[in-house]
Length: 160
Image 1: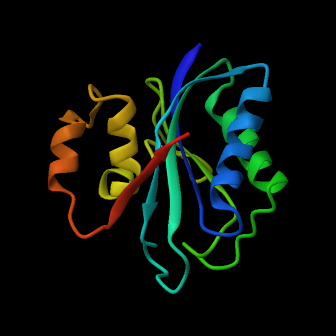
Image 2: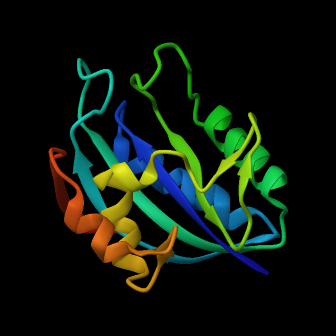
Image 3: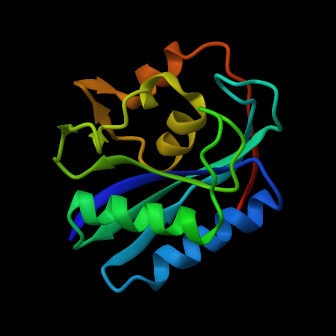
């Protein structure tokens, strides 16, 4: 089984319910085991700012799926939960992103791992740090990355 981390977020409808449904769908897949779930975090939108705040979490999974099959399943979850891609960084019922996948890296147009801007995003790094304080990304300790983040408002809401 390969360890992977997924970032999950929502800012439309019942955000917490959308995230919980996505976790349930992950757990239903025979080749995915959800091993850790971060607390929920409210975060201001990035990029397109004329929208509601997001609710975000990070989950750690163990999976037998290869990265592309995992991406496909994440996109199936988004489709099931009625994700519409209208505005870049715009409102969404659900967003399920592969942040990290074991020792796999890719700059393929279809799948970029590690997620390209995750190290700049407190809404990803803080919940990721919560569930794995020992992560090293590009030879930098996750704590050092978090200490350098600025400007993004992130509020811990609760644990599942």
